[in-house]
Image 1: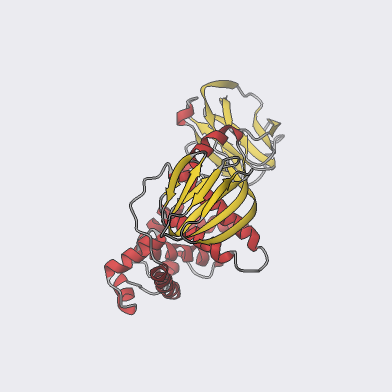
Image 2: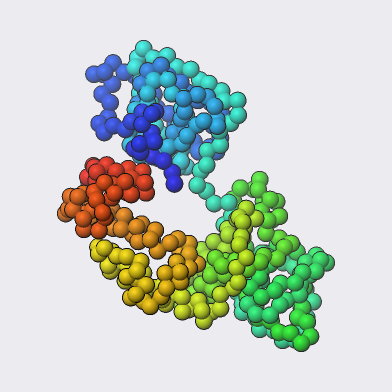
Length: 399
């Protein structure tokens, strides 16, 4: 998650304020900084007095620290008017396509511009790759002896084997794609496909165009995607299953959803090189369907009972499931424990109740079945990095 200047993590560096500074009254001066988006910060400003930052247009972040050391700097999004303490080192970076910020300080200021020995890389939230268009998607059922002599084209092509196995060559190199595995053919790669005698194979083909937003990583990303067979991965299998299911539905915006699902598949594949995978067996569609139905019933029950003192034992008894099976169901499908899910849901519900301003913090704590106001406050702070009272104050100030 990103940090904001209104969070407690920013307190060592300064604070937010509400009313614009009256420069004449306080004998202060100002300048307007026009900011452009950049991924690197090479120099920092250092004042011997308070500095006030007031955003005029666009969105920005502040890179800040107590020394001009790139490794020690932190980044905060500027959502309010901000006062900086004397002596900090900082730079303001545009988050939007452009931004304007007024910098206000004492007329007797002293300022330094300090060059960083190593540049600080600001992590803007931008896509690396983007699916432009899906040109074709097919479910193929091929029998023994099928032999595709090969082709090459200017697009990416995903082949996912649903049942059986598929022999393929890419630029003359042989690969075998087993059941629940997949492979990506790249633009301009000549590839063939073959099914051995006595075998059959069902597989999904998706042909699509994809651009690289950051051209300097094009070769790196192709190296991660091409000339390899990707083993079974539960998340990717689930996404492909959703893609196949959604592609048969004719309702508005379904094409956009299909592109989003394919985009996530490609991102998961790019990430797979950097993740440690456990060996998992593919879940059969029948078993997965049973799990989906049971989990949906349990989640609905939890949601409807969130204001009750809900226990794991009660859920197990209600749905005739053992504690270990319930833990496994949540781990496999939600990647968290039932207890953590219930706790997070209670805290989400508490945010809603705080925004409604119908109950006090103590009443919300009691209403949601927390053991005490102190336990509720501690759990809320751990999740949202602020106390419930602080959250309530922020919500009230927004309206």
